[in-house]
Length: 78
Length: 548
Image (cartoon, chains in turn cyan, green):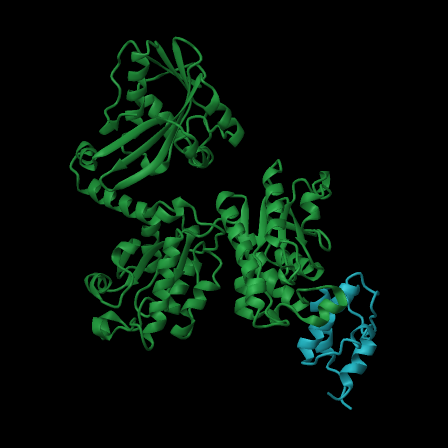
């Protein structure tokens, strides 16, 4: 099981939420930042899909509500 | 610069679009503060009177409607709904700026064979409605969302999962594409377009080098590599028709290069399509400066295209105000170079835009004639000038209002009347708003002058303003106007003309005209008067006045 490329993950979060690098924390959760609200969540999902070349199931999207959960999902075999 | 407010209105959730447009406007330094009007706000904001409350009173509106509005058998009549929104916008005072994204149909759905009948007809009717409306109102601008959908495919703009989860017809990544289009439209609304496109010839207008390959070896025919140059030339002609002045800036043997432009059967652009031609061996920066001088335009309104990196760098260094385009590595990229260049973006094409090239052509011919004439009088005489002075009519209102606001140099008082003030003067029987049209053998310059004549007093007529487009200064037209006015005053038994003057820092040419005409200035130099009865000699003119 390989790890998630942390640089790519961080870049995707910064771009999707449009936040400066200093506000990034590796353990961010939905709601921690004003920008990561329900709308920001969809923007993050969309960005992760294009960055990592994956497509999330509709049912999974609400559950990917923390970077920890996202890492776990990205580590799963495609 | 204080940002202007832009309220985004739609039928779906546009949060992602709004955030993206805010970010893109910031990145492009555009002075727009973008706000979200909320879910399904497009009718409510206009008809409900809510967003027209104090808060939203002066915000511009951006309508971003989704294809969902076009769907279904039983939709209430969408064209009618849009019509009522347009009528309400028309009635609002003060008039706000409105941008309206045109509608496109989403082809993904049931009954694929019937969808054209269900949706396309509705979409067409809405498109006609919006086209007509934007042609009638200068404050109403269309944003071409449907071409974006065609170019990218609706799948790139909209994705069902995001609509299911957030009511977003426009997906997050689709919102980026859409916001880029809107950002470009907002930029066009905010910044004036570049005026001149200066082009190299060899390997730009055609493939190959005249001096080496000879005319027969040049590629610009309808097939092969020439096709890309041909498409490029067609695009240049379209730009020209939209009001861009084309110019040639080429290091070449002038006779050889001109022969290609004149005679080559595959060349679509002809010498007459260019407002200026600089073909020689000088540095390009010097050639560009000469073009700017001849066209009387600033170099900051120039865009420069050259295939040689060396020439581009020379111009960049010497003339940093000129926009120099990156040149594509293969001719296949020529068209993209123009379509991605935002410098010529405009949201509408006015009559003036359409005739700009021709009027610069005419001006160049006049300059040529002026250079050849032995005396100025010979030049004026040879122009065959005619003018018509008339009381302004309703169909001239828009042009008259535009002149009042655009004329800076030959403008006696620079009084910028609002549309309503101008209407009041037109309706006042004691007032006469006079229009001046000028033509000569090189062309019709159209309505280029305006005078406000206050005739309330019995023995004195007061000229509240007289202004003349800079295009016709220096053809004795102003002298013709004073003579005509003095003559009319004399016939009417008026003893005195009083002309108001207010310096604006740029209208020195107008004050010189008053002096030259022999008018006497008051102590404070704000009233210049002419004793009509004295029949003093006024400056010569060479203009044949046609009867009003």
